[in-house]
Amino acid sequence: MLEVTKITVRSFDPTKCRFFVYGLVDPRDGRLRYIGKSTTGMCRPRRHYNPSYVERTISTHKSCWVKSLLEKGLRPK
Image (tube, rainbow, N blue to C red; front, side):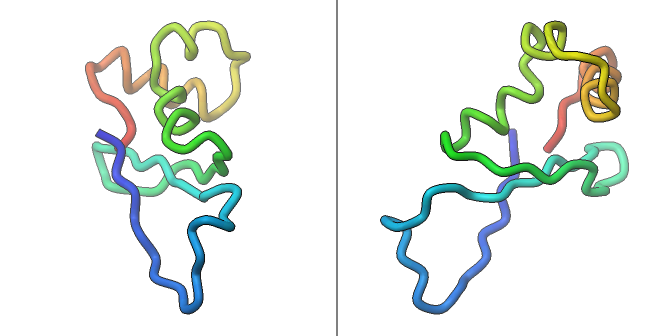
């Protein structure tokens, strides 16, 4: 499951928030490997480790990392 860290900010109004920032963490060592921005809630972060999405993406460092995790039965936290 994807872990999302909440950060409390004074005078934050979620109704005015248009995006949120998320991170993908390597489950093997707990290191933050990718930071992204989503305007579609949790749909965007989850898409990163969907096997059909990973197969269709171009070979970037991030996609190769996610693909190597999926091949080992793991996925980003």
